[in-house]
Structure formats: structure tokens, C-alpha cells
Length: 284
Image (cartoon, rainbow, N blue to C red; front, side, top):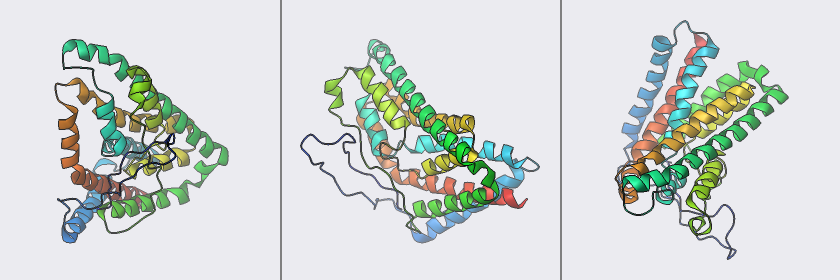
């Protein structure tokens, strides 16, 4: 599949003037065959159409889109954990020392600051996109935008399934890990949460980010745009709470690595299913 794992970089620039990079990993040991991926894609499309008739039958288009897009945004946030920023969050923002109730309690301000950073980033990004959509009058183009949006979701789903190569511009950078030597941990949590909450400052590998961005922009509503990015960022934030459990960061990141390809499959299935669901909504 096209889902990739990228090396860490420095979004603020390297003090030495260069940044060492490692080529993306594009082949995984559990990559499914083309036939299996085609079956998954077909099943995803059929599920999306079926969901339209079983879950959204008789529902106004606006309401159905809300019920579809908000869970999609939350899932996108969770799936963004399978990216360099998700891996490094687990390693960077952990309780200090050996696991104990005291270390977890001392870590809670870091967790809280991280949540505040995510919320601030979501409000800023969502508010900017919602205001831009409203100011430009994009919300009046729903009859054209929604079919194009559905088609884009299917195309990016095919991209994730490995059948197409669709442009996916992302800033493939990462928060510098030496930040832990420069600031108290709660400050790192706040700054890291804000940069990740803006979503486009670091590398987010799921195209569901584009789906959320498009929904925020074409809604023409500041409130909706902020709300959907807060939901997306909530999905991004919640996996960090695993650091409050008696499990090492090595075990967490190893689990993420083992399930990298499965996450890409789920990502692709959601994109294709949502695209076909929206297409079916326009026809009923």
C-alpha cells in the first residue's frame, strides 16, 4: 500500500543547516495481494452504499453528512497515530521515571497541557477554514462541491489501497526531540499539542485529514469547521493516554509498527466507504 512511515525531521530547521532523512518505507511484510485489496475495496464501497439505505434512509442530506463526517473525523484522528508524530508523542510525553501512581499524577499537567494545545490548534485551523469558506461563499457551491468531495474520498481510498498514486502534499517534518532538554515537560506537551493540533505543521499520513479539511472549508460555517477539527484532534490526543498505563513506550510503538499495514487498510476502507456513502446520499 501507499501508506508510509517517514523518518523524524525538524520543522524548525536544523542548527547544522541540514536534516538527515531516511527514505519512506513503502513495502511492509504483511502487504496483501492485489486481489485481496480489490475485494476489500469493493466491500468498502458496498458497505458505504448499504449504510446510506440502512442508517440514513429518509434523513435530510445535511443531517446525514453530519452523522457521517464526525465519526469519520474521529477515526482519522485515531489513525493519524500511525505516523511519525504519533510514534514520537508516545516516546516524548511519558511520565518520568519508573511507573507508579506518583509518576502518573505528576504527568497529568503534561497531559492536560497537551490537550489544551490540541484544542487551540483545532480552533485556530478550523476557525480559519470555516471563515475562509464563509467569506468566499464556498458554502453556496454544495451542489458541485459534494460530488467532487465524494469522488476525492474514493480516489484517496484507492491511493491508500495501492491502486492509484494521488498527490498528497504534506510537510514531512517532526518536532525536534531535543526539546525535552530545553523546556519543562508540560511546556513541551503544550507546544507539541498546538503544533500537532494545527495538523499541517507535521506529517499526518492519513488522507482523512484532507476529508476533514474539505468538510471544514466547504461547510462555510465557522462553528462546524471548529467542531470537526476538535473531533479529529480528540482522536489524535486519546492514544497518548496509553502512557498512563503500566506499559513501556517500546511495547506501544512495537504494537503500532506491527499494525501499520492494518491501519492503512482501515484508512483506505473508510475513505472508499465514505465516498460511496455520500454518492449514494446524493442519489436517494
